[in-house]
Image (tube, rainbow, N blue to C red; front, side, top):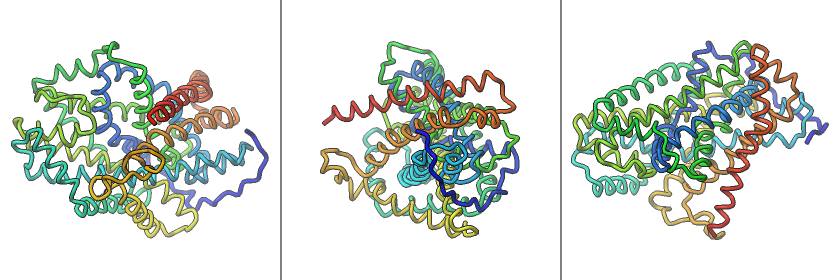
Length: 469
């Protein structure tokens, strides 16, 4: 696995770009991690897998596996001082590793670009439903009307294309302004706003009849509901929620001053991301239980189930607006982190053209996203892999490939690379202010625990996938 090939590295055109403060770096990074994985995916997955027991296992994976891998990604970025592709190429050369490890850099570039193309579709729904909430369109909703309205919105292909374009354009606008004037400034606004909005929802839930039931559902473990499959889902959700393997952490850490502690920063990211997921549950489940809704109603929980509650509960108009505003905030902060890896790489190749390159990348994301937008209307019956006997729309195919295949593969490669390929002296330099206990834990987790756990998930996934044919 170790070679002596010469690696030609791309120049880093902006080595002086750094975060203005630790708080700015952490706000942007936590904001990049907190996304629809926390506010849309986590609540319904917890609901489908029994609640409290699942949450406990999820928390264990976040800190036992997510924390050391996140620290590894940040080490790669700060050490390489460039885009994900540049950073990995730089470390391959300095560590005398095989050039095949460059796949980490390319996955960390391509995966977020592709993911943003369909992620922006869900973000466009959040924008659409925010407009409905402002107009109090949920008033008097029942299950049938909610389903009908959702289907009608999805069938309006032109409207969804415009909303998708609007969201991508908003993301490009921030990225085009650069690190300090764009990403930092927006993080300082959006992150306090996001947590402020979510706390409003939690406080509202505390005074509802469903709050006690929500607490018991989320924090009273019932391990009889926990299956082997639930454990694997908890691991996958931990990686997905923390944005492991997406390139965001490597890219943002490239702008990280050498005096910032990587372990402390990684811990804060894990805590902030987990806190958002827990608060999301405490915001959503009291509404669900108070209105006798199904907490395990799947992906439709946010866009089909909750609007029923908003349309029939006291203060539902205001709470509906606040909720979909929260959903939009979370999608927006993550989208910024997903577009930056591509623009950072492009800027290395064409220095000084950031605004133009950001727009070009945005157009690429938007065009690629058309297949996902149309998956819910004019291409609803089209399966891109149908000739292999694999059913699923363009959206389904991309979501499955990114979330269930390429993200865990990249996380596995990162763990193995930092655990086995990096010289001990390299890690010791980056963790110079950390305890020996941390260094032992970090190396052991990346060498053994994370690779074994992620491999089990991948094998189980591929086995189940093959058995479905």
